Length: 119
Image (cartoon, helix red, strand yellow):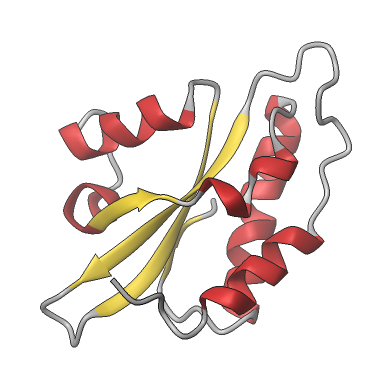
């Protein structure tokens, strides 16, 4: 599977962000990014940005199973992209909400046309 042409720019954008509460006591939340692929729409690629108090792998599995799922992740989710966010986790719940939105905005600004989540 070839990477989407915008992936390097998305990685650079994500790595520019910083979390002030990484590793602090009580920092139990994570932000996560899922690679999306819709083969019916010219092989369109995108990213979903979420935040959770659970392990991101478990949360991804829940999306795919339909539990509190994003429709985009359930239908089009391929895999997690931990390399984009591992420098941000774990963090506090409040900061995870802020960084979830910041990641989505950074991905859009870097040329990712299909970005879900981030709210």
